[in-house]
Length: 159
Image (tube, rainbow, N blue to C red; front, side):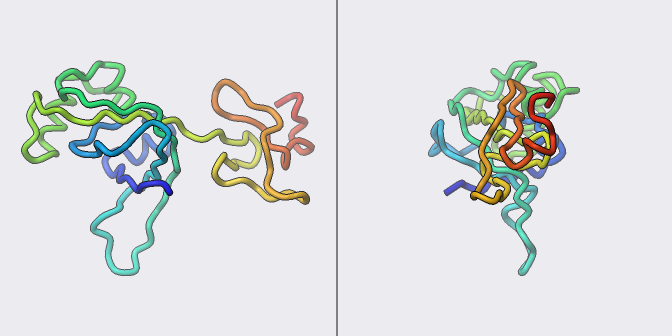
């Protein structure tokens, strides 16, 4: 079962699939192959407030490293393309009590599920066809594809 993870500060970057890395103070129990369900808010919801599940992703890498070793590429992968590494470290320390630039944190990298170019179904939310859940008829390098449920409506060879 996927673990829930809040992405409150980077919700838009997750929704647009620009965020592929996060840094956390804890989360040492994760391993490559684990799944995370990314949500705008997990804790602190009011009674009856629904949990907004944006997407379930596959963890591809987990490692511990000092916060101040972040690269410019990882700042962008974190969902902050306009920040420098130094600005990111300052921001992270300001939003995480007790964290300093030398604090060892957990770097988590994930992969988004493939998405059908026609209907939007994914690896974890297949559309229904006459013979059951759809499968991938065509898969493309940009992590999209055309599912068997949409092949005839899209003209899969031209997708």
